[in-house]
Image (cartoon, rainbow, N blue to C red; front, side, top):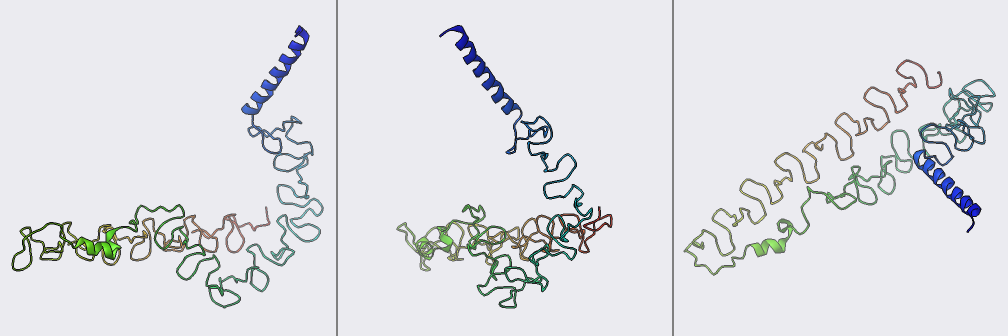
Amino acid sequence: MSSRPLRHFLSIVVTSLLVASCALLHPVDDRGFYLDSGIHSQTKTPYGPAGYDREGYDREGWNKFGWNRDRINRNTGDFFDTEGYDHEGFDRAGYDNAGYDRLGFDKTGWNKEGWDRHKNSRDTGTHYDTYGYDISGYDRQGYDIRGYNRCGYNKRGYNRQGYNPNIPSPSDSYNNPLACKLNRINANDQQYDNKGYDQNGYDQYGYDRWGYDRNGYDENGFSRWGYDRSGYDKQGYNKSGYSRYGFDKNGYDGEGYDQYCYDEEGYGRDGYDDEGYDRNGYDRDGYNRHGRDSAGKTRYVK
């Protein structure tokens, strides 16, 4: 190989390595913008080949649909376009061109799935449809069609990964009648007194005068202190006051949430109630039930 082809080959290799190293040091998104600077990899400017920046706005601040960052329409200079819809596709009354508001309800108060704003089914007039499920897809016992509740656990207390450390194995003898029966057999050939007890105080079934076996449990699997082998009493609660499913006698878990993942005041783990408002009365966009933010401005006023 002559020196000239060799130099050409080496230059190609070096260029490829430089390009690869730049890509590693300055990764780009799927549209070609550098993640760290927002500069486009082809044009070397904040704008791509089509003339729009990473957020989709051109040099004058308009997107391809004719809206600017302040949600003003280019053609009307207003928050609504020539057809009377805002940048999200809702008219001044708050409905889209299909007749549904921002929460998905039409002017008569029903959504596409047949539920009203009070979570009643159009078909039954109750909180449950003809199949027995509510608006969120849970039945009267709080389980979805796959058998899991709102917190992600089935009736046996297992999550979707099949694990729950607080739930005893199905093979535990306390709930296995056959195993309980076998537990009453005294394997040792003992002599019994006239009351039927051996020298250690156990009858032929392995129970003492008070009805407890060598491990301290009665034939129903409860100890002298009233707890089974898994630490739950006859009502199904442990010493901390929680059931096998992690709820106390008032229906709340250790973090204060019920089986539907709402606290005593009706707020979910994300801090919002079932209507989407937080404890201060504001939705996720920062507006209250009257459509105003904390400064008193409406949703459409900058």
